[in-house]
Length: 146
Length: 146
DNA sequence: ATAAATTAAGTTGAATTCAATTTAATCACA
DNA sequence: TGTGATTAAATTGAATTCAACTTAATTTAT
Image 1 (cartoon, rainbow over the protein chains, first blue to last red):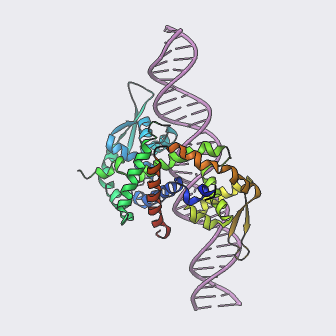
Image 2 (spheres, protein in one colour; image 1 turned 45 degrees about the horizontal axis):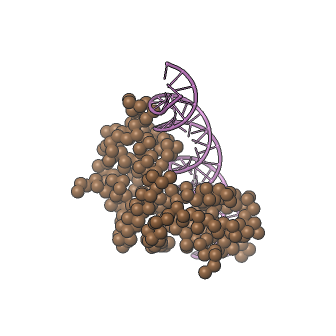
Image 3 (cartoon, rainbow over the protein chains, first blue to last red; image 1 turned 120 degrees about the vertical axis):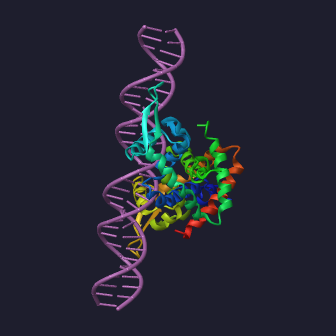
């Protein structure tokens, strides 16, 4: 086996990760369009539907995104009336976000999305489950390390 | 288990895919900086180091990217002197790309990258291998379907 | 043979992402 | 106490990505 074997596309590990990630986000698109949400907006909303209230920093840690990405997206969600921003009284550097009534209500309808999305993967259910286990395990390593 | 369980971030399958993909691309960055390549440029070069000559369309199929993404990146690689573009004589709609001498030479040095990248995953080697198998299997479904 | 349909690339515009920088608030500690 | 360091968020600029559209070449069907 030659020294360049490792440069072959088929031997890259990151590549299928990157390609599949983009493909799945494309699958979300038609489902999210109905709610006028992009994928990034959607995952921010997912966190808020669990947390009710969270700082930009913590949001970034959960989503592995930095403030440069999150700030403008949150701004748009505020404009759409789904979120509210306010400063944390005990430390004015911290900006918190929370759901508005409209944001809370959206949860009731959007619950259809995971179900609909997974219909694209009929037949791959176990592969998908295994995939998630592996991804979570590896991703975990990056929680501190970085 | 309540109806909203599926909306929890920890129960999303796409999310760790998306997050890990971005993280790994960040790991490539310092390695690729040395060669003045971005990740997208790198995977295009990977294909050319295997194929020697390929059309924009085929390149897109291999990388799951469309011409809107590939065209400007190829343009930049041409500008950097790594690739050349020319039209396919038998069908002038088709634009082909091939390596320049400089592009070919880069392969010799850049072969260090896969090795260096995987050092970030010491201890996860099997998880990584399993991950790749699962990814490839699922990604395969999108080859025709879509 | 010619008009309509298809195909390949490229362009445009919106959104994301990250690195680097800026601003403002808080903290550390001498 | 006050100065320097740190921290949180936002901003800026470069690059990516995709959808939608345009242009040019080829193919199809009449």
